[in-house]
Image (cartoon, rainbow, N blue to C red; front, top):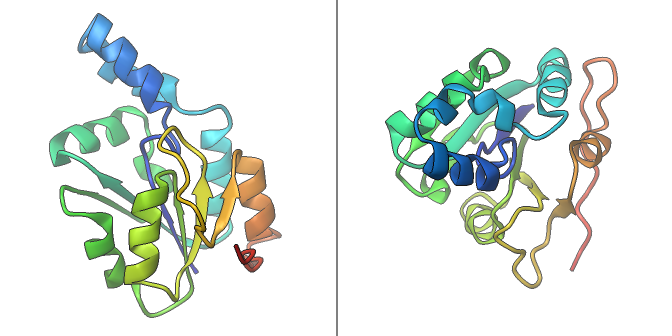
Length: 165
């Protein structure tokens, strides 16, 4: 199984990070790890130890996104880190060829990925961008809810089907 995670608003409290960055400056970037949501590192550690292939797919200016990943200390949790200015729906298809679960915060971006790769499974971790009407995937608020959906048990992952909306 491949698990693809988003960075901003999914693992990182980007609202607080941006507020502090624009009011305090560059020292905030050096402390990016302090802006991870509570439980993010533990969550990633459990996913990592499950044996799943871990991919971080983040949208934005490549050097900036890469700096946030590195300063937050996230790279060791992932087999691959992809920072891109291309829309995720254009990148997601490269992961075809096995079971894939995508965890993202942006409902419209998730809907576009679902249209591009409908065979994948999707979990929307609710963020500030809202949820489009009729989005047919699991919608959660916490890492604990994500883990329940993934049913992490001794390195065997299974995924519960999404509710029909």
